[in-house]
Length: 234
Image (cartoon, rainbow, N blue to C red):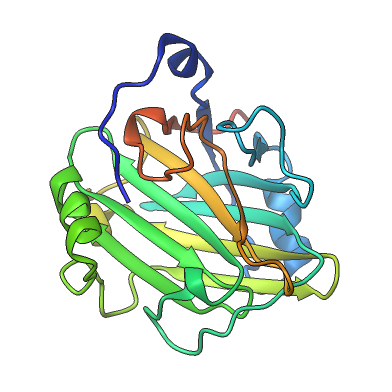
């Protein structure tokens, strides 16, 4: 799950560094309203930086971020021609059961980070690692019990357009997860967004990430991007 390595100079230069701007209130139940409020935000594309060229079955996905109060807001558009996941409950091994969208977040002033997964049918996986060593331990022993968050850690909503795409909206509280009280303005978080894209009849999923990973390992933290929380200009 984790490789602790320093990125090359080239990768460091290409790390996504973005401004995460404040958003006005909106109706989170309506896809049209969600798309409209995120429209001005920078769009991050997922890719396969560890390959010379993307796989033949690669399908694009895009992520935009914003914030309000104490919460990071995430909106993803996931192009997908075979949308499915068999997960039926919280914290099942959803990445082995079908399509998932993944969110990795870590405040720059602490070693703890979270990994969240959302399926097209809005089932979630919630993991919190106290530090990089904890992630390595999970990889070694294969047990995730020590890093699972049992109660609802974040809010998410999904919309599915069969045979075309699916959308994810998520709200993630800094106070609840990282004990960071107060508005997010002026803070910085490391981030990465990734995806498992399954297609029935294909043995392995196509994976992709917003990070310029030198290897297909989403936990390579030195290659994650950095977002700065700022107020939107009037």
